[in-house]
Image (tube, rainbow, N blue to C red):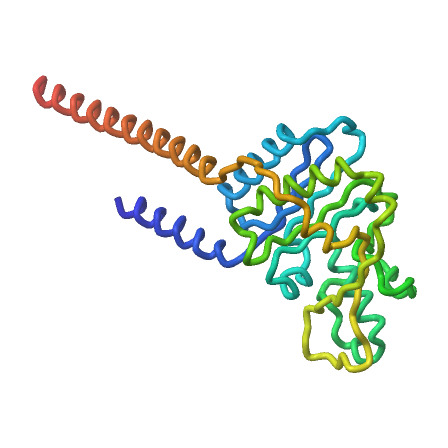
Length: 274
């Protein structure tokens, strides 16, 4: 019994420790790739995101599936720090996974002497690509990756404090809008400039403003897109998982009881025959 209690304590303490850290979870299906942030090691949150993507694929009206779609949720700190309200961008753009390591290496390099001692990360950069001056503000999709990325619909979304109850509906709405208005997006998108908050704050920023740019249609227009009803309830996924867990625990408990009963019966028969 002592080892069992120790195991329970270990599992609980591990879950508490993981709750304070996050990880990026990436899933891709039917031409749609979802980038999202979840609690580190959370199986439950992964299942919720999987169920969301399955429902999204089922719900979307996609006549042409040859155009890939990237959904990037809560990917960059600049969204988190600058937007209390929900915020989103929609564009037809190069589809590449986020590379914050390159962004920070480049921005510190451009700071010159004030940033030379404050590299944004502590691993050796994979190349000197960041030491070549690029057109500024540099694109948010700039990366150490050298392969040619495909073009497709890119939606960046941060639900903020005011959209937490309608986040699933909002993602569905933005994706369906992008599919329905592809040509308008191509014609109307422009570069938007945003301040990029660097990891280290003890540098002299007086002579250099860290900025990035990204393609998007007018964000005011995005905010006025009528919200569609998606009909996804993540609590149903949790309840289904809990039911499966209860069934599994019940089966294990039954096996244990039957095993104990079998051992007790054998001991009783042995005692009687002796």
